[in-house]
Image (cartoon, rainbow, N blue to C red; front, side, top):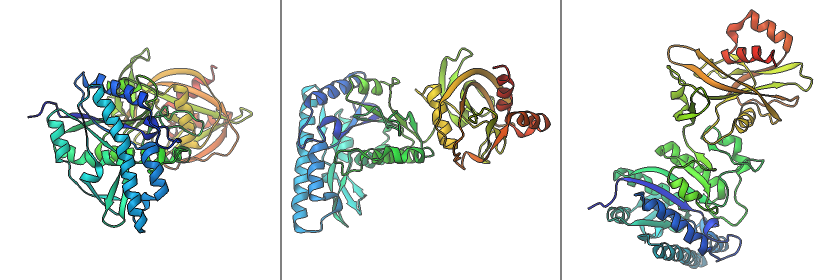
Length: 438
């Protein structure tokens, strides 16, 4: 008999969160206990979980020493395999003990005992005991572990990999994974300026890939970039979003579990944008493409105007042909929608860099509301916040966003728009008229 519903939240507690990652074999019991309390707060409200944790300075230290991730090549590697598993057991035993002390019905499952790999990829998984644990109301706990591999002898599956491996069979057993929460030591994923990237999608990853890199401490599972790439694969294949949060800060995990907006990075295959009323108060969120289908609801937008250093020329882009609204029309330097939890300023700076490869100081100048119909299917209805900046350096447009760009003298631009207004986007023409008043 099942004592729970069919919805689950998957929670991954990072190895650097629960261990001192640069100090071999040193755990953080106080943080583990607080995390248990925050999970319990959700559990008491009827939320059920499948929990994973990293091995941190336990498993990663010995795995690096014995190069376990590379497989079994020599006889001593078999001993290394045993040592790494023992170290992973050690931190799992501590996490299990503390969670039980906090009143959570935790049952640990050892990935090496229910998983078989071939060439570092999952070949077979035996999930029935985990499903049975869920049916009786227990909370399964898995962890980063060594995995026997038919081709390489052994490999290592991170906590994220094991969670991913469990999603398909859980879905087949009629469980709905509502979201994945990865709790680590950072306020999400950082860009090159050390600021949190609010949302990462498959289309935006290449803008941040170099900046993301990997964590500084020893991590045989690949660090932050590995986490992001695996989360994107889950989002694309399964439609399940991941949020990366700072679990070292009290109540962040609890708020994420309960669906409250907190600082962090959302990893998703889709972009949702804010629907607003006339006073710019959020009334809901909707997927970006669905938002732009007629009748279009009022939603937040950002437009960026770039002038050269002398303020005599304006940068224009020709919108990519694949865009559903106003493809191949000339427009301002960049346009976007603030993502969930993202400020107008951050959205303007982000999109200017993504579309045109430009980083420069931007100033908000005004807001306006407009509505325009492109065709019977697509349109716009935006509360548009306009920013302006100056720049005279290299322009590096993303071809998926802009097929061309040009610098145009302001007086010439006004003449061209009067002569051929049908070549320009409707919002850009409105912005130009309003700029003459500022």
